[in-house]
Image (cartoon, rainbow, N blue to C red; front, side):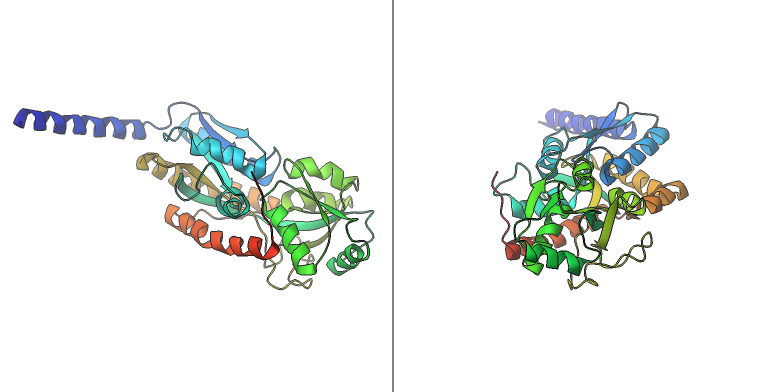
Length: 324
């Protein structure tokens, strides 16, 4: 019995040493970062910035893979079911980690049970924009136009369950409007139709809207954050435009499958926070209109826990429910 106990203890020591060695050697092969949206969107751009930084620091390839669809549920499910070894990560947003559990009858993953949060990375804002052919210059004028023609106007959004979708539905609910929903596979996919006036409006990401608005190709009416953006200080918030308490902003952060070794999570967290603090990264974020975060795994987890019931109430009050 003593021999068996010693052998078992030795086995545990060897396993622990092997795990420690694997963690200290991480990463020693390419790492994938999945994004549930199309190329050119804010999460895709930021994921590529971090991937470049990680590759430079660790000398190993970090590959960004865009897997849009189902409000980013497809990408999220793939990571939830991936091996918990740190070689498959998700740039996950509040759409799949906070909003979708209240939108869908069932999901193939549980945000709190299936993922190990690494760090919240950035917060963005959406902008309510219309084609230049739509004869409105303010949110109030858009509301009047929609009420004068019930069911005639439409809004494009980046996918069911995204903050763009929920922002538009919240707008419809608060203003008592009849506007048709037109889903797309990401913001970049809807922009050509918005520019061509094939959809009447969109709560699209500031990264995609602002350059086009500055060129006079779109008309920006309001921003969905609580405060005005320093990038567009003359653009009023939705709250200032008559919708008190309106806020619909996307955020994104890195998560790994639950069970990923703590040493690997620690390395990823530390390097993410360092990357977000560099002047070069901060400059790029400012240019894109993004707010860097870089919080702890515990703080990130608390954000998910806190916001889930908040968005559940919005979804319930607006009467939104989706099947699978």
